[in-house]
Image: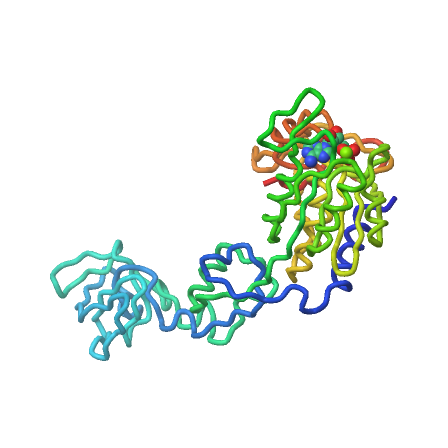
Length: 406
Ligand code: AMP
Ligand code: MG
């Protein structure tokens, strides 16, 4: 049995060594389609930003030295509007000012913008300024945000909302991102029926294929459904053979100690090299990881919560590493524990929990649930507390690590 940390290391090491450099080629996608994809080019500013000294207030462009005595009356010499370059005629000289709008270029001679709220219009060409101003107030100097040639986004970044705006601002209508790896999903079990069917008393609906499908998508890969295999060797063999043609194969169920758990046997038949098949994790102990050639293979324990957790812990980092993402590790946060959480002596436990913000801090408590098949219980939670293996408990008031579920 290996620790979770060791398991993640092994998965990532294999992803780095097993994959040819061109394993996940670059593809070009429209800007509208690139949210959450992994960027594969450095994005460089194509000009200074802003391109000119720019007003960030509506008001009057002034010489701050004219406002040493307040109120001050100034003559308005013209206006500078967004989208028009300030003409040479609009030069601000002693005791004059220029009307200006947010986003417009600062006229020559001015060194500050006074907000319109701090002025009083006396006549079409006269204004009273009610507050003093210092040089640089109400404006952004050319290049203050970025200089032409600056690197704004690095290859390997997962594209987030602000990056979409940045890409647009530097003229990237098409963006180079990693191609999505294909992930085959196979559910196993004689007791499973499809979602549209009504199970008889001895059966249940296949839910794992759908949670895995969503997780694969969310991680940035392309899911492919292989349906349900029965717990018989010929059916498993046939469907696993198909799955081995993908970049990654996920098999759920059939990896425990039961008489009809044949998945590892079929992996062996196909020559899959297994790197681990027991993890000190609760739930998720019988998680299997290996590869055949360039295909990565997982056997995920069938219990719905186990499957989801094992995916987040091991499969998601693998997908992100294949995509050449710079940040591949699960996102772990901390909150104050509201009631003690018991440790398991042998395994790190992952426990459904509710985290909420109260009195200036995040607080977390375990959610009532009935074990690793309790999907309804998991739906009432919004996070998973990570309780490291060991003796005793994490006490109320201690910091506990958790994985957000959405
Ligand atoms: P197994 O790992 O095959 O022993 O399955 C463990 C438990 O998970 C059993 O109660 C199965 O019925 C359940 N299970 C396995 N696969 C699925 C699935 N695709 N959807 C929902 N439950 C499943
Ligand atoms: Mg089974």
